[in-house]
Length: 431
Image (tube, rainbow, N blue to C red; front, side, top):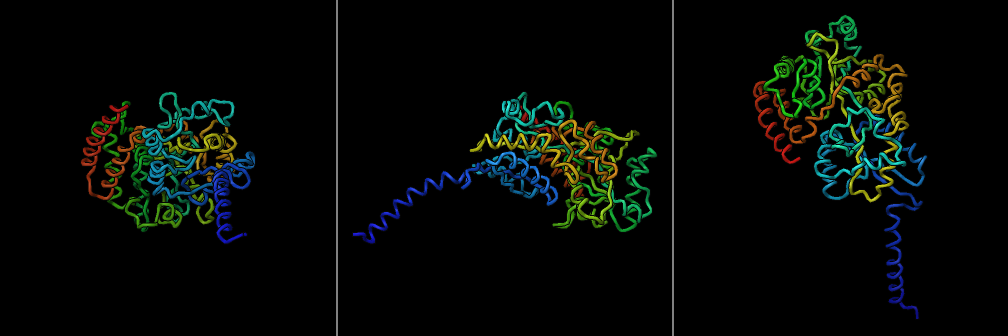
């Protein structure tokens, strides 16, 4: 007799049979695909480029699906490190230099050299500009691959300059007068019009570029901080602090929550900002914004000085359960084909691979896109600062206090040199 009890027992048996089947499908999906997860930061325009490369990869590899998880840059590092600790981090993900250093130090990033040099890799290590590896390469081992490169340049709002009756930075540059004095004078002019000349930030990209533009250095060849010994570096901090105090520049850390430098630039409240190509897609998508690039102003008598090259890396999670699929995607995403797809037209960076620079210049917007490429050839990474995460944090905190008026340049130098070198010495002793 088919009783209610028997029916319940049959349902229980069936459910126990089905659960393992469902568990087996959780990684492959109903279609038998392997699903991997990629995390990255980016504004809406940047994410479009990422998705183009993902779509092209999935078309070539119908057995692999890539789920893109956008994460705000403000919480990105914290989230990735928390996920790493919890064992639920993405299979592949973007890492800036400071995060890359942390991942290598914590042994969370998968070693990639053997795979990259293997026959199945879509890209080889020798295709990349060798000066860009930074903290992603320790000895002969590679732990992250450059997705692109981003030299620092100045963006200027053509309309704001024209309305203020100020010559364009390009005109000053052509005259050999694009220097600190000119930068300060035009910023003075914008202040008189109720605007700011420049948005100053406290992270390594603009700070190390400013110091370089004066012929100074923050670190010596051993990675130690030398702000207390380098007069040009000290002079730079004074120049920046003075201009923020006089309101020629506005400090990004003092902006109201939700109001970034991008919004200020597009609304015409500020004439210039410093960045890599990552702001370009956003500005291109706004037809009311007329902009161009110009190299960083100098104080050395030279037309240009080396600028920081911001670099993002693609990292593979050492704990990934789909290492083969994850690496296959990583090698494609960083390959020549993918970089062309991601970086042409409204790309957010320039190639880290040689031979495809035309993707940056061919559409003619902005007019002087070649300045990015020139900066890549002469620039440098912020590796000394990024390689020791605690120093990177200390530097940003110290410069924050400087621009908020809580530290003098002298106090900033004393604090950062003393505490920073102590941390660096401890870090080097562990290596």
